[in-house]
Amino acid sequence: MIVLYIGLAFLFLIVPLILTLINIKNLFKKKKIKENLIDILIFLLGIPFTILLYWVSEFDKDYTEALRLGGGELGLHSPIASWSMPTVLTIFGLGIISYILIRIRKLKLPPVIVVSSMSGIFICSIYMIIWIIQISNNMDKYIFGLPYLTLFPINYILCSIRAEIEIMRKYKQENLERKKYENKFLNFCNKLIYNIDNWPILAIVFSLPLIIILISILMIFGQRPDEAIKAFLETSDWTLSTKISPPPITYDGHYLCTVSLRGHKNIVKPIRMGIRHGERIVVNRQLCIANAFEDLIKEKMPRFHHLIRYIYDKYGYPLSKHINTSIQADITYFIMKPLEWIFLIVLYTFDVKPENRIATQYIGNKNVKI
Image (cartoon, rainbow, N blue to C red; front, side):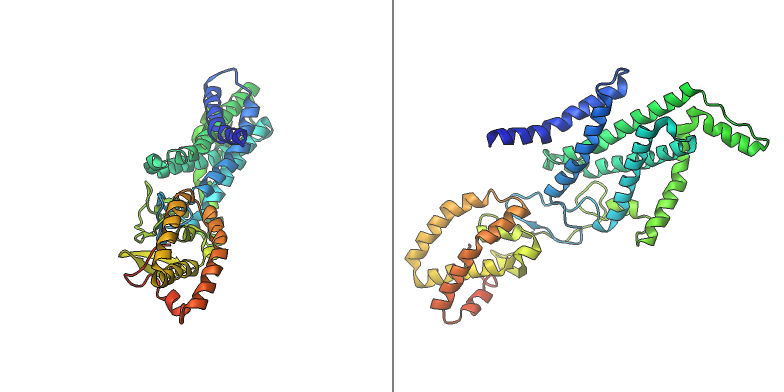
């Protein structure tokens, strides 16, 4: 098991850094280090690793939702508005396709397609830079996550620059003969396109009509004209954010039933807001049943309650500190289910009005913790 952990740590923490360093060297060295292999690994590993890291980071709430805090969570909203994802993914897809065309097809592409692909790379690269700026202000809060979310964007830009330099160099070596036209305007355009040194400038110029085409297509699918920018602006907690999110809802992360509320809503099923020590918390039926059970034991058997509380505080609290993700919280919710049923049986056996006791949990000042 230790070997497995070491292997995963090497794969996800060390390998991305090694590939990035080699990629930087390949940009400046004439003799490349396994160029094709490095580029393939960067894309085959970088894209899924970035998606996985983003998912594990649990940036799943837009600025319109209140965060549920507790147990040492970061408390950060999504750096990209969820409703803007179609635009973001389209720009990302354009950049990947443009890079593949230049990197693989090379001299098999006509100059106009090459310049258009360079425009796609330019648009995507600008977007990658905006992404890095967006998450930069929280780097210190998530030192083992956010910096790694910048690695693929950085490597994409490096790979793209190298691919563009290579294809321009090869076209120059070919000394392509350009056709001459009688029409002066066509002759000027032909001369402009076949002059390799003009391609970077042409790529920037061509990016404008390419953006207009993209926006027109995305608008058909319900995206706004300025969606690409609002994707970063309509957020909170990040560098480019312009929105203010609702106040966070805290919960005590020291107790298993409460920790389980960190899980996905469709699983843990929160039912309402409650009050604990003057603070608003989220409650579900499992939490109310557990608290009602302790309330009943405290009322009927105070000495036994002290023993239960001692055991729970000694073993439940240390265990709860290791529950740090939604998936772990979901598992905790299911693990607590048998206990929930036992608590419910006890309540229905020894309490005259068990549902009243359950329903009144976390609405007053006499609450105890579970």
